[in-house]
Amino acid sequence: MRIILTALLIVPTALPAQSATGRIVDELRGGPVPGASVELRFVSGVRVARTITSPTGLFLFRALAPGEYAVRAAGIGYSPRLSGVFRVGDGDVSLGTISLSP
Image (cartoon, rainbow, N blue to C red; front, side, top):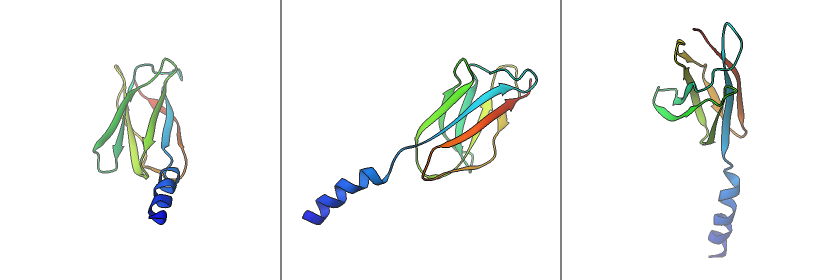
C-alpha cells in the first residue's frame, strides 16, 4: 500500500505540461498578423487544437503531450502555411516566426 501511494504522488510531477509558442507575421511588411487562425496538428494531419493570434501576432498552445506536431497558420487575405514538423519532449518549444504571404 505504501508503494502505491508513493507512486501516485510521484507521477503528476514527472509529467509537466509542455507548450509551443510562435509569432505570425506578414511576409512582405514584417508586421504581425493579428487574428490569424493557428492550428496544431499531428503529423498525420489530424487537428489537435486551434487558437487565434494576439494583436502582436503571438500564439500559444499549452499542455501538449510529447510527440511530433506541425502548425498550420492562415489569415484573411493570406495563403495558408504549414510549418515543418517539430517535436515536443521535455521542454517548451519556440517555433519562432512564421511568415504568411498575401
